[in-house]
Image 1 (cartoon, rainbow, N blue to C red):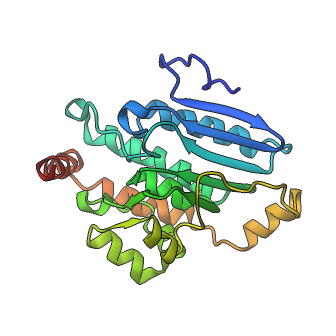
Image 2 (cartoon, helix red, strand yellow):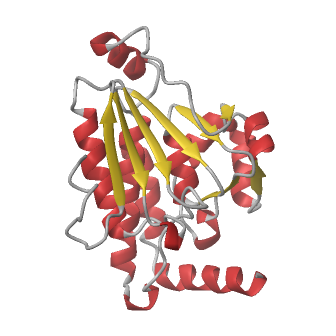
Image 3 (cartoon, rainbow, N blue to C red):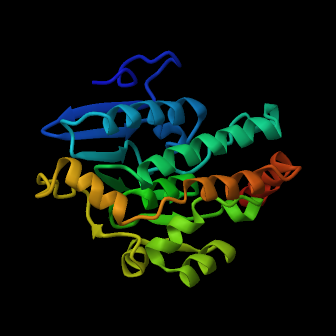
Length: 246
């Protein structure tokens, strides 16, 4: 169990870490807030993902979540006390995590249930293999408060036009629709994780050769969008609209 699997410096655990038979599993553990990505959870994910990617004994990294939902996106609790700069930093740290996964040298797997919204849906999309339980719902609302986060990666998964429609029209995909679009590989709850046939440097080289490295462009697009004045105000208006629809 990793350092964030026990009683971490932030109080209660936010991430459960388990290793076994070449597989590391990181389980988001904030079910009381839908596993929303607060600073402690994002930093825990970054730290543990870095460790996993450096461990030559591992061939697979799996992301799961406790509770009803996989991840409901950016944690907006305490929004009133945050500045535009605070929010920008949070988004940059999330993009850093997503880029690490998109360019990971080993197999990455996401297993989702319930809601995979916003940055949670981006986390799912960034993984190489993607499993969703029946009833999972995917939503990418960042553009509704002026953020460009994960759109290019989503376009690579489901196609440019489909990604644009989904993001710009504020739509959502259920499990069957996500499977048909190519966002979900397998419908179920437990992926098959046999050891890959190709491992080590060759597997790393294949992954590097088959994916263009556009990390700088992705980060620049995010920062340009988030740095526009009024980020907190835009997020506040978005949250108010969502609450009014309930």
